[in-house]
Image 1 (cartoon, helix red, strand yellow):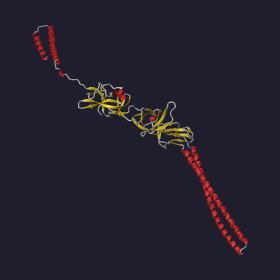
Image 2: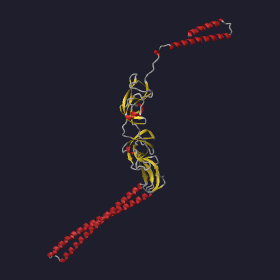
Image 3: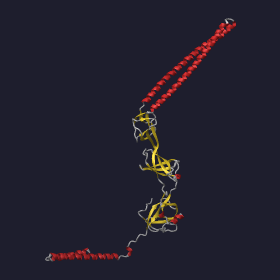
Image 4: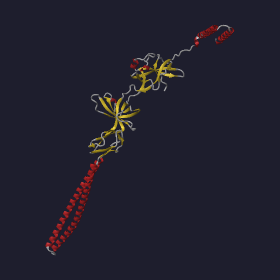
Length: 455
C-alpha cells in the first residue's frame, strides 16, 4: 500500500515540474488532491486486511479456561474462642518501710527516689551525740563494776587464806587437847590444864567455822558483783545498738520508691524515712469475675505482656487467690508472680494477663468452607452443623492441573464464624475456604491471589 502511494506521489511531482507556469494557488490545489488520493488508497488496504481477519476459521480463536476460581487456606490448629484478657498493675515483690529507731535530728540522707540500694548500705545519719554520751556513761559504770568484782575476788582469796590458817590452829589445838586429856588421866598433869587445852581446841574450831562462813559470804559477793558486771555489759550492748540506730541502713536490696522526710527534720522512733521496693521479682495485681474464678487455680501458668515493654512476653504463676471478694463488684483479687531478672519491670505498669487453659486445640476452619453432607454444590446451611457432619474440599495439585476432592469431616463447636473439625481434616492440608461457583468432587480449580501458599 505504501509503495503504490509513493508511485502516485512521484507521478504527481513530475506533473508539477512540467506545469511551472501555473500559479502558486494551483500548486496547493494539486497537492491537496494528491493527499486525498493517498488516504483513499490506504483506507482501502486497511479494509481489505480487516475482512481477511474476519474470514479466518473459528478454530484459530483461543478457548476459555473452565477452572473455577477458589480461595484456598492451610488447615491450622488453635482455640475456637480466644481466652479473655485481664488488666493488672505491677508492684514490687515486697515493699519495706525504713523507719527511725532512735530520736534525733536527721543530718544526712544520701539517696533519692529511683536510686538502687543494697542490703546493709548506709544511706543516712542521725545526730548521735546523746547516744554517744549514754554509751560512755555505761562503759564507765562497767569499769567500776569490774573493779568491784576484782575486789570481791581478792576478799575471797584472803578469807580462804584465813580459813587455812585457822584450820591449822584448830588441828594443833585438837591434838594438844587430846594429849592433855591422856596426861590428865595418867595423873601427869592437873585436870585444869587438860580442860584448858580442850577449851582452846573448841575455840579454834569455832574460829575455823566462822572463817569458812566468811568465805561463802565473800563468794556470794563476787557472784553478785559479776552479775552486776554482766548486766552492765548488756546495758553497754544496748547503748551501742541504740547508737547504731543513728546510722540508717537499707534492710533489703531494692529501689527507693518514696522519700518521706528531709535532712534537718527531727525524727522520733517509728517515723518513716524511706520506702524501698524489692524488684528481684514482680507481682501483677488484678481482679477477676467470680464467674471466671473456677478456671483459675494456684500455680497456674500465666502469660503477661506489658505496654511499657511491648516486645517481651513474661511467663508467671498464680501465687495467691484472695478469699475476700468485693461485695459490690463481685471481683476477686488475684496475684501473679513474674521474673524480673533484668530489672526492667517497675511499679505501676499496665499488664495484660492471659491465663493458660487446658482446652485442647483443634483444626479450625471458616463455616463457609463446610458444605452440607450429600449436597455438594449447594451453599452451607445450619443443618450440617446440627448433624455434626459436612464436606470439605481438599485442594490437590499436579503439574499443571489443580483439582478438588470432597472429604467428609466431623464437626465440633462453632463460634465467631468458625467451626472445629474433630476428624477428617489434618493440620497442614490445603482446603477450599471460598468458591466463586458450586464445586463437585474432581472439579478443576484456579487458586486466587488470596490463597495461602503450601507450607
